[in-house]
Image (cartoon, rainbow over all chains, first blue to last red; front, top):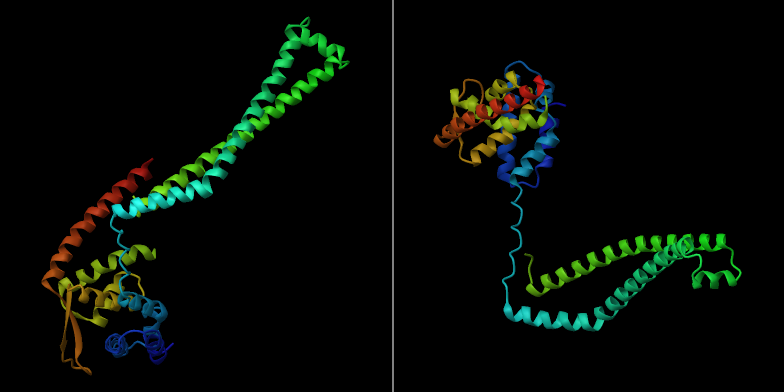
Length: 196
Length: 106
């Protein structure tokens, strides 16, 4: 790359700058080439040691780029607006959010109950078999014709399912609570009208 | 040499070079690139920034060979900034060296 190539690239890349700035900048590089040649270096050598003209143009453009816009100002807190938003959010929540929320919460409570019921009934059945061989319940079951092994296996299966269901419930409840907390905090933010 | 290191200290090097004597562009660039491996073209944008910040000023002087030359000189503020940066730099280098040597000894 010789002097003309170098200056041409620089000139083209700097078109977005004001004419005077571009003229000034190019003047510096023209002088640099002239001084270098006067010292006995070739244009190619000088261009090489100046470095990539595209990168240098980027450098220069960045210097002239307008400063980034200031961050948006926080809207001032307005009591009237907050009261109005409380009303609006309240209506919205009662009409649209309350029913699905209650349904989901109810479902979760039901699942928890089922998990506990299954878990404990299985364990209880095993306990009864082990400790109260003469109990009425046992007699009753014996009369129904189920073998002891079947009964024990059934108990284990039922309590395992209960435990698994309990684990599932645990994660679902966690997600549900997190979602609820986020929703509530979003409500507050909307009412106050800014981030805190 | 690691590029990010150079970027940060090039301001200081330019101020230091100009604190000895006023230079024209090519002179200043060769002065610095004699000791530090850099893309010489990056000094001109830097000089423009320093001028904009009021640390450096320029004046034209007739030269024996060809058109007048643009000389760069430190302003009063440039001299003050150079002194302050120099102190900061040595403090910083001492700190980093102490830290690195301590790690290295382990």
